[in-house]
Length: 110
Image (cartoon, rainbow, N blue to C red; front, top):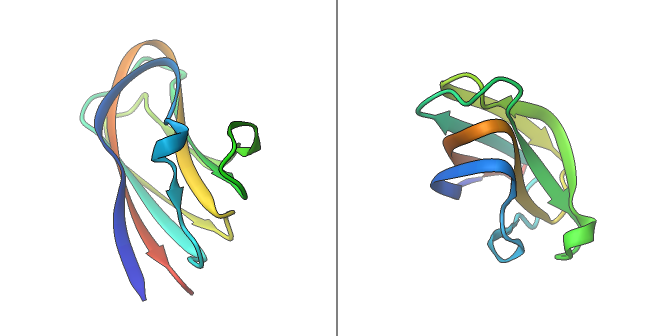
């Protein structure tokens, strides 16, 4: 079984930005997440988007996981993640200026 959710509607981020704790998503029993980041325009070089995961809903518990999404290139980028903790959210590290992106997720129990 698979489910879809949007982790982030189209947003504009600058510098170091982390999704609010209240907006983190509980993924429960899902074992695999396929994450697609859509980037309508390229950000400056050395700009990245990280998926973060945590076992509990506490700011200090979240940690970055790999692979990382490159915001310096426009278009679509997709990665799969396996065996994450209970909650997920995103963190952007943007070298200069701003970056626009949205994040869609397909979650699978297998």
